[in-house]
Length: 261
Image (cartoon, rainbow, N blue to C red; front, side, top):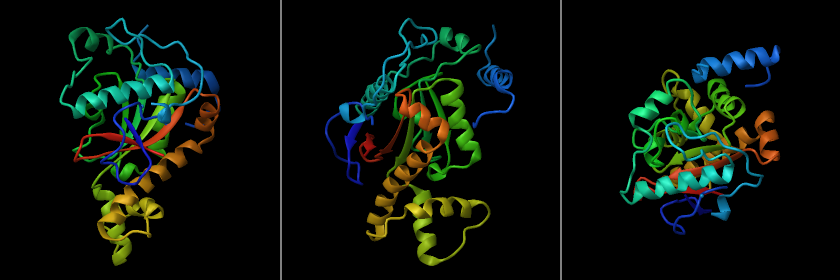
């Protein structure tokens, strides 16, 4: 990914990596059970880089190449994948029969991507990754709740994933709805009000009209990223260099993913 500090992400330097559950009471037994059940186990450049020492990475299913095992390695892999995507050189990796068979018994994803539900921004395509590569969590506007927090924590704490990317995008409908609701004072139907309530603190009142929506997209990513990084168990891994949590946004007009400072 590209590193770019302004609120609009359509431009920026040409690519380099875009770096950057709470403890249970019955300990190892429950943790082992959770890991077994959920995995199915049978027998982005200097600006994006995170600090930390390299660790041994599990082998990619069905291949001899090692998985990215550090935040830096994971960022570089995602940056390379997005570069292929936006230049129409996709590989659609890790889809063959051998890999599908291997994934029936285990998984070793190297990044968690918390993205929006928008149909135009599927993480596996945007980063040109395949089966078993990414653990994706998608909610409108990247909104957090207990299920999302638990899902991210599972990927990091149980699977040892070294990178979490909070991925917003240009022209986000959830952000637009939050801005419009604040201006009109109207409440949204059903559970959608929860979404706008969560996004509202990120609204950029220093901008107007479409510029406000665009700026709020970036501000919302930063807010969600900060909330995740403040989770005690995740913060502890960040402090030791084992984890990086970065914010980024996808530009629909250029297909580029750019990191948010």
